[in-house]
Length: 78
Image 1 (cartoon, rainbow, N blue to C red):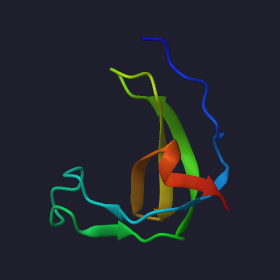
Image 2 (cartoon, one colour; image 1 turned 180 degrees about the vertical axis):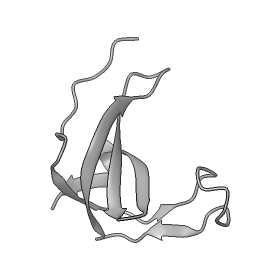
Image 3 (cartoon, one colour; image 1 turned 60 degrees about the horizontal axis):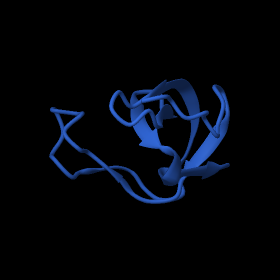
Image 4 (cartoon, rainbow, N blue to C red; image 1 turned 120 degrees about the vertical axis):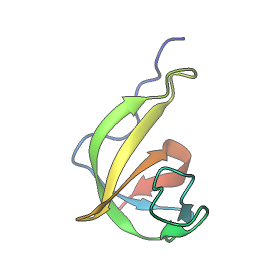
């Protein structure tokens, strides 16, 4: 599948438009634990794509030690 063109760019400030919970990516935290609440601001530090769907996946740094993989529908410009 061909990758979609990303809507956001590296270094762009974004905010979460929904609560972002642990999907198992952080094994040291409880599953479904809130990682970043709706409205939390962060910066895109890397852009990749989902292997199967080709959709952009954004690594967003919400705090110095918290980088979360997000989909476009979970973000808005800050």
